[in-house]
Image 1 (cartoon, rainbow, N blue to C red):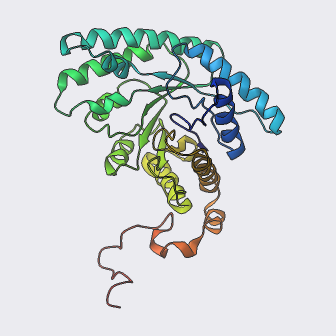
Image 2 (cartoon, one colour):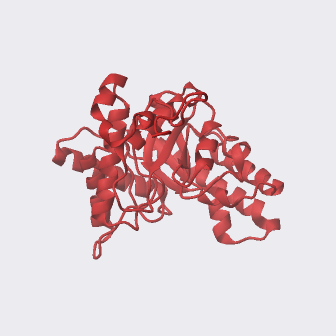
Length: 308
């Protein structure tokens, strides 16, 4: 059970790249996030150099803060998103996707050879694929398979801030990714896709709403973690919590609050059930909405609020 970020982090005015990276990493470390990322607005074209720079700074910061080292994930753009940004026509889309997949495959191999323990492939454009666009489905699958060909290491497929149900499980789960990021704040489709994930794969649930600066409600975050762990008997060890997408539009103060709440939720969700319940503000939610209890009254039983 861990917390992480999945996209860009706020950047205070006037900060150069080095200072912005230091801010993003320091805030993650002070919030006790389990897996670190650079928080850059877009993944660096030189993925290996970007990861090395981030990992080196994280190692320096943990010494100064007196913390244990944390894994740093590499970030790179997925092949379908790269091809979509290039704007090729339908005829050239497969060629562009496969070319991008080969480049990303080399990047993945390089970062894992350098010692990275995790890489996040950000392919948000997969959410633009229509459910009835069979040629796009086939091309996206081929691209993702080529991306992962021969790669040894934990690779996360991230689709944040969008609904990937048009691509569907046939596309999302064709290639052997280790885990998947879903925005579950948008609506039920994110949960529907997550429920169909193979049980051996991890889920990073985008439960902290990046669209609003207010702190997210701890019991709901904990419930989401526990519910995700229950799907397919996945277990808490294969669950992570994250913002629903990048939080770069928030103030630094609001972003810090998001990180702190996510890390706290991951900590509480990992407790034994009795200790977890003691750690939650029970008075703030009706009894039926506490984690581990049904959110809908059972059939045949009167809702306690009816008839009063």
